[in-house]
Image 1 (cartoon, helix red, strand yellow):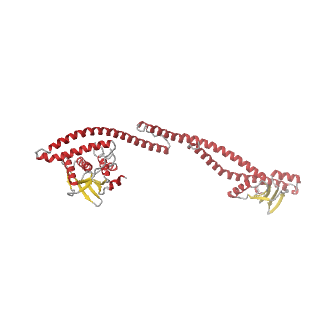
Image 2: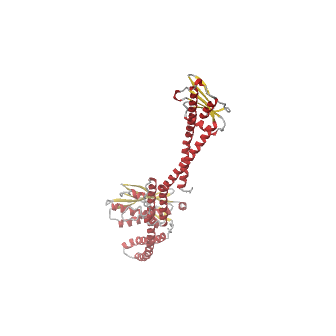
Image 3: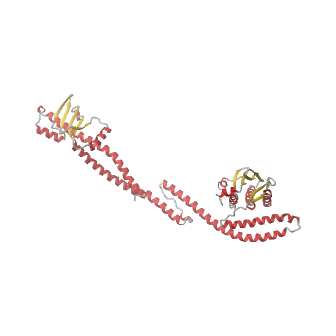
Length: 467
């Protein structure tokens, strides 16, 4: 029970109520002591006035002792008309140990005196000074035993303590049941929903429906519901991706066989005497070879085994020319493709993978320009630095929308074109990282978009990037 929220709240409630009662208890004890002493002063004043009212202010010793016993004091001195007079007296058993001045005392003075009174020994004599009531004099001074006052204070304190304890327990129990009803029960409901959801997180019907009326718990339920919806969506997406991967792997397997046959037929076309066929046959063979490699790479990807790049020195202008030639054939004539790569530039890369990266970037740019219904330009350029090569793909298209920028390299979320999958840039980025390089968005606005592809010169950087 102590480990539970309601149990700890119960204990804390009792402690806090007891602290509050102690803060009330101390002034109460001081007030009780003041009233006790004032009552003794009033009785002593009545006794002294009775003596003064008698003939010649003389009474028998038995009557005087009776008056003192009734007032609960040893001596009574009354000051009237600037003259102090010992009206009643009896033997005082011991020295005065405590003196209390009740003429306009401060709260601190009364509290301090009360606390000292409780912890003082029971034996002793108290001298109390006060102002007589009804203007019966200017001062009344009495002595009295300390033991009865201390006993009365302790008795009063114990009664206050027990009453405080009862109030504390009742208050704590009421708070305990209130917390259990309005706080612990809703929290347990949330926990139960989490347990039920954890059994089958892909089941959307198990997502919690926020119902709490407490602001903080409602916020927690809203946050939990949002998290569960996001997780369920992610799980469904991963399941669809797994199914899609299986289907693509089957298609790629059969397509690879078909493309292999087509490659064999294309090889025979190279022996044709037709100049146009001779010129197109090598490009057709290269395209079919890349398609076969793509199918094999897709099969490897379906087994979560992305093949590492086979690095060699690649003639970049020839590769860029192949990319541009393929996109020109697919273009509707509104896009101008420009090759600004320096002739003879060689880069260290996997030729097929680099072709896929540049092909994805150029294809995305072409489709964006065509979708805008305006003429545009795509330019491919390259720079060689001391440590890396920088390939730039720039276009004059409409730019990327904010949502696409936010999820640029996220599968199925970074697509811009209607019907697109959003996988092109993801695949391109993964292939570049496999080279130890980096693909990044340099600029995008209403004037166009620019991507930068960095390839390291030193082969060791690939291993370092994988660490």
